[in-house]
Image (cartoon, rainbow, N blue to C red):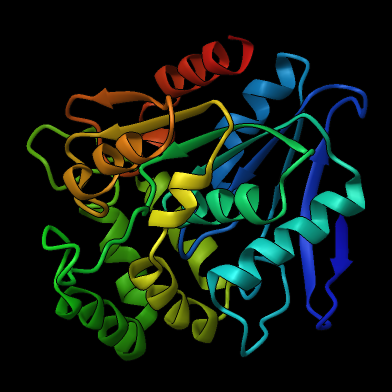
Length: 276
């Protein structure tokens, strides 16, 4: 088990598998999960000879359930502390959902000279909440509703979300997996309620527009067109326009959690981009 302590005293759990001289692939997980959400990717790329690294965000998974610092600046700084400790270079940063925002914020703020490529999967940038400058965003009431459900009955909420929109299991004919639902619940319940409550503001209200404009790395944007959590029109489509020379891949009918439900397709496309 790997653990580092940040400058403000938070212990961050990480996994570091594979040859230390291989190219590192770094995975940034979504809300309210942990690095375990990347199992299907980490095992696949480990088998392809890569070094694979993932960490649990502060307050999530096996990292310290600290009461503060649940914002993108801290998320990116915590990630940087892990990657500097491991001295990762020429790394490919792959972020899903909230982790896409974290990966983006990291490469812009801390990744110069270390990061080689960036992948945003079903990611929250440019900004999720509806504002005068983002009229296509989701109303703040949507995120207030998430906070209310978390505070009222987190355990039930964390069954309802993966059972329905997260993996598209509420769609007609969906191949529902109880194991996937229970694994989502397990990851969520291991983390701290305070971190996950505050994290809703971090993933929904952080404005990544300037970050996207500053990216100078080869970037792949992957998004399902049936994403019910982070709708593609105000996320992936806009991000791909803001990042210089970004490659956009749209997946017809794929849900938010497509790294799990369609791991075979996503993994092959990631491999092609990484080797390209």
